[in-house]
Image (cartoon, rainbow, N blue to C red; front, side, top):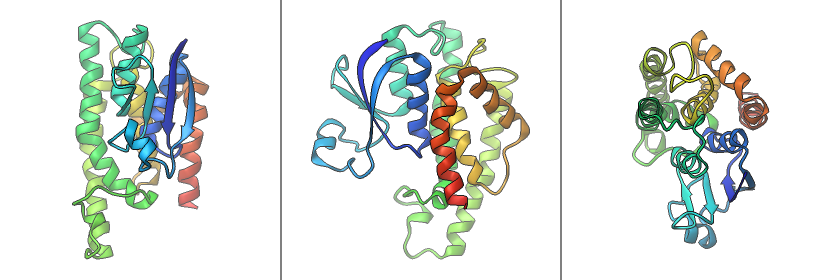
Length: 229
């Protein structure tokens, strides 16, 4: 399946992992470029003014390029009619969209505050971890509080979105499963291990997607192992 897609990505990132897994699972032909050190260049920002990854250049898009992992997956799934990955049924799609929006709006900001300081990723302006005047103790207290707060959001995924299968109540993973399972990869750097249901769910998604997931996850897992080591 060809869409003239060129992906700008950062291999250690679970946000980028989402789109990399999706493109492989969808069978969409694409090229990849490591965007490390390039996102603030005039050439990059002329196309992607938000200077974010993942970002794609694709001929069919009205601006020629776009960013945001969920939006990219939604657009390409709609473009190619990938019903299994992004159900057209409004009821199933409501679960997929709700999970993606809850993740990006609630869970991921907490997950980022809990994991980015340990991963060496830059944190967002205004957060304790970004304050030069904050003590190490205050930064760690803020990080730990975010990690603890992740538990409630994860429980929402268990009881409402995931239950015993995949998000969207189908027989195979959707774009929301790819986004959520990828996000869980960063929790390997946290103090508390993931609950067993989350490990089982991630394994279920990985098994269903095969090397489309495992091959990309290796980049994230290798990076985390390096940081922990």
